[in-house]
Length: 289
Image (cartoon, rainbow, N blue to C red):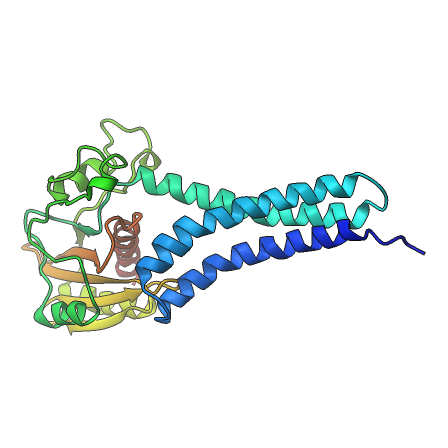
């Protein structure tokens, strides 16, 4: 008859349970914000960034204690296996959070990206009203200037008071100074030039917006203007997008795009990625269609 590991088995099982709880804490923080149970500032800043890492460190510590206790005497299999499972769960989660923090620190504090700041895209009144109704804190301006709080200036030095357009340009891939695009915080964000009539490009834009599950706010194919909102799956953050099409003299179409977060200082590169990937997929859809 197998011997019971006693308190050592219970400790290891508790460590595994605590590790799983620590991971689920992040999902609770995000989904609670999305469902309006608490504000996004509390869910992100307090629950996710402040309390979450502490829970994971505690879970790692308890897991290590459970493993050591399990090794002290027989039976060892059950407490050691449970302890290792607990350490794996909490350790992987902590590594993920640490990597997330490193990524955030490597990116500039931008939440407003567009293809051409010399001729900025401005949102329609309908989109601006939607942003206001949705509690947007970030204004949409022609030439926005970064305003970094004093507490964050050590993390992002030498950017406070600078034009967003300048900081975006510095963050993009520069083939003259960088060997690989991966060396840059951002991909190159520039207008997309297509050898296709505007009507065909407009149809492709509208189809791609709907495929992505964005909420269409403005759809004017004849005028070449589209506006939409993307809602993130976890926290429910809303970012607003505007796409403008211009017919070229050669019979082609120029595509410009702007993506702006409603809240937050840094978007963790989400808007730059959104613009870059949308334009890449649009080129593929138009050229293959």
